[in-house]
Image (cartoon, rainbow, N blue to C red):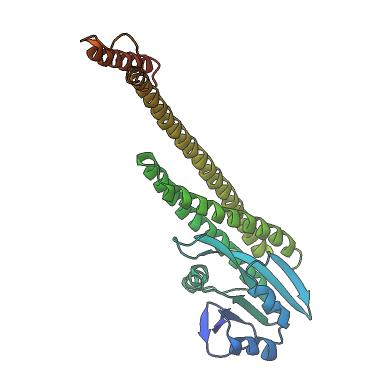
Amino acid sequence: MRTFWNYNGGIKHIDNWEPNCWVQVTCPVDDDIDFLQNEMGMPDYFLADVSDADERARYDLDEGWLMVIMRIPHLKSLQSRSPYTTIPLGILIKGDKIITICNQETRMMLDFINHQMRRAEGFIDAADLTFRLFLCASVWYLKYLKQVGGIVDKAKRDLDKDIDNKDLINLSRLQDSLTYFATSIRGNENLLSKLKFRLPVDELDAELIEDVNIEMNQARETTAIYNNIIGSTMDTYANIINNNMNKVMRLLTSLNMIIMFPTLITSMFGMNLINGMEAWKIGFPLAIAACIISTCGSIMWFKRKKWL
């Protein structure tokens, strides 16, 4: 699906392409690919690079086109293997042509359009659009990190009540997502530092780049903080699980040893051997008393050692 936006003096939807408009392509189909290659003259391998989910943040120049690939945050599903991930967003610039390509529909791009409509100022040029997309991506990294923080707090409260494998697995999945975030943010920072010397940057763009750097630094530091929190939380509860397991094993071992003494006594006197107590009337009560005394004595000893 492709959408055309006139960005002079505000964002306005238009029906067809015209010079100095923004072409937004989302989840491209064959018709969109044909339009980009035949009518816009975009190199075909650009589209293949953008469609690669593992493509790193970088820029490339070919046939007068500047291709910028940045990594933006994306929420798949809270029940998925990695709830939060990052996907490539391609920005292609050549003269009066500005194209963005994303193979998935994201909340970030919808929010970006709505925000620019409310802002009612539009973009000065392609560089302004590019840096504002970087700023929007940084803001959405922080939004998703705030959600991650809420999920971590809830998981910790649940684990305080009852240690459940489900909560630990969810924390592990969030840790995978934070790894994607940290790698993508670092890649975007390196890309932004290179684009400052590739795109025409005026005074307003310089201020915008500074804002982007501030947001990216905050997102990177927040990602590292949450990653450390999740790692320490999982280590802590893993130690608690091991400690509880040790207590259970110690209790079972103590019970086994307590039972061992009366078992030994009854086994000795239950053998078909002469032991001198066969004719005693108190022989059987004496054996029972010995079992009781040995059991009580071992229980008292284990309690004194705090093994029970």
